[in-house]
Image 1 (spheres, rainbow, N blue to C red):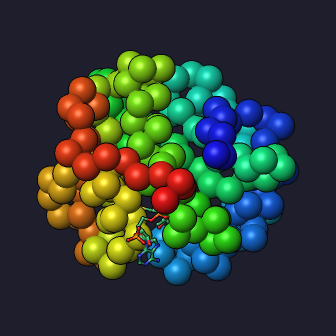
Image 2 (image 1 turned 180 degrees about the horizontal axis):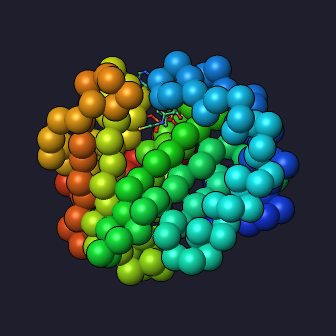
Amino acid sequence: MPEIQRLRLDHGPALLAFEEENRAFFAASIPDRGNAYFARFDARHAALLAEQAAGSHHFHVVVGDGGEVLGRVNLFDVAADSAELGYRIAEKAGRRGLATNVVGRICVMAADEYGLTALRAATTVDNAGSRAVLARTGFRPVGEILLSGRPGIRYLRHLNDAPDVPAGGAER
Ligand SMILES: CC(C)(COP(=O)(O)OP(=O)(O)OC[C@H]1O[C@@H](n2cnc3c(N)ncnc32)[C@H](O)[C@@H]1OP(=O)(O)O)[C@@H](O)C(=O)NCCC(=O)NCCS
């Protein structure tokens, strides 16, 4: 089972490789990060770690057996006991239940390790994979939103409620 590790400075090279390898795959579903992200990766990585140290975010990488980054699952903009969830999984590790598994695990970590009581999320209507992940991990739609001009759905998960649907996993 891939491990969820809190983001550290030494994850930088593997994280950059993950973002480069999957750039086109991610850009088919969510906005591309842009060339500047890749050109100035190290500075941005360090800046985000400083924000994490200040308590604004909880970033994580999903690490495979060989130390390779297979995904990311992040809690952004921590405020008033809640945070915004974001995630992405490598194309080659996709459609095996990994996102469902790590989102389920991050909900437990958010409550038990970070003391949060709710997570927010959003995805575009046409992102069938992401919608499935959120539905399977207990997130409920709470409204509509435009995401980079595309119709989207906002979701909420109260962390003290058990999800109606068990978080499936990579064992399936
Ligand atoms: C969306 C994403 C996180 C799904 O990751 P994953 O590990 O493949 O998800 P899971 O394996 O847990 O899949 C959950 C369900 O969604 C389905 N699914 C996954 N990708 C899909 C796709 N592109 N189209 C349709 N269904 C998809 C899976 O097949 C599974 O359903 P099944 O069990 O009936 O087969 C991943 O494709 C990704 O990172 N995409 C780009 C970034 C992104 O969209 N992030 C989310 C932003 S809100």
